Length: 75
Image (cartoon, rainbow, N blue to C red):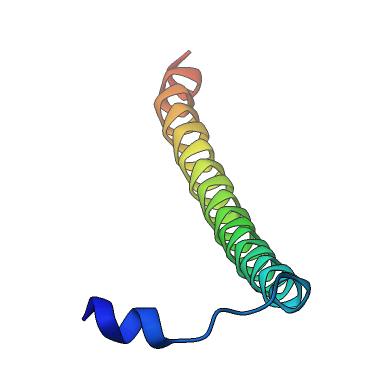
């Protein structure tokens, strides 16, 4: 296997820079897309959590109102 690798021509340095730069651009684009997807998921989770918090608050207020109403009627 070492013989096969030794026979492969190496890229000249002035040409290799283009490929390295291209690889960095592709990697940066993939990381940027990943961060955007994670940001969208986080926003969706936060919206859902706020909706659940609102529902819980309404239920809590409704339960508190139901407990205080009979006491007010008796007085």
